[in-house]
Length: 364
Figure 1 (cartoon, rainbow, N blue to C red):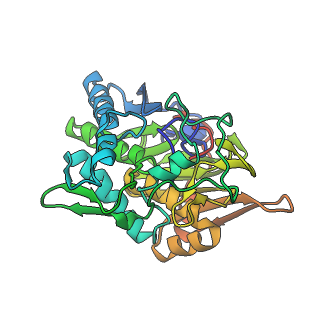
Figure 2: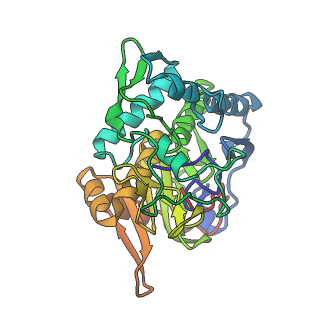
């Protein structure tokens, strides 16, 4: 499970989305687009629409994400999820549709992944010191307090089965004291889907949203074809190692390569294994393409925790487009992808011209 607010330094391997219109490879100029950006959930959300584009559409999408941040952010003591964590062990708490929907989606993917993705990791996040005193993830400057076995105590129950939901009443309760939900592994995707709904409500049928490196492509770019997305090396976010073409899909990447805190035995990565109560052992990256941003966000974390062997089998059995990239002990850069991802890659050879929609620093 990721510990993050959504900062660009914590959100996934660099994704450079290129809005490539048909004909750009032959030198023709791309159709005009309009882009706006806003800093939300600790990172940059950029939205690109075909020109002319109404400013009201941009503002509606940004406002929706800002509204959700107030409900879903663990980095705000007054947020709805923080209030839930403080009260749900005492009894059922009635939640807003937004928070209940996010928790319900998170629990769904916790069950589907066998706990590789699990939202109740708040106690583990705090035990490892993965939030700085200023409400930001420390950038190598934090430290983990040593316990007798060299690892911090969990500080509370972790498993997703400690969370009880009642859909008809829209309530959430914890079955033990110390349980705490962290939506860092799904909140950004949930917000992206909400922003897309806000755009569609205003008649927008073509758009590219880039939220700190997670991309949501709506429709086809001006000129036709797919939105071409470049996936960076886990060691150099400026160097794409693969290109894919997508439409009506979200692309998310998780990596542990940049953000960490200092532990007794070395750096502690911020992607946590809920089942083992320790940082995930995989040292590469994983990219997934899904039909919606919520799914892509959650599964980029869950598959990272699974690692290439188990994760690629799990994804292939569900016909998901997934790419694992890591460096072997002998220095060779290894890749493992599922057939659906290979199909996307065949259709996504790099265009000669296009617009870079944005890139996030490694570390989702």
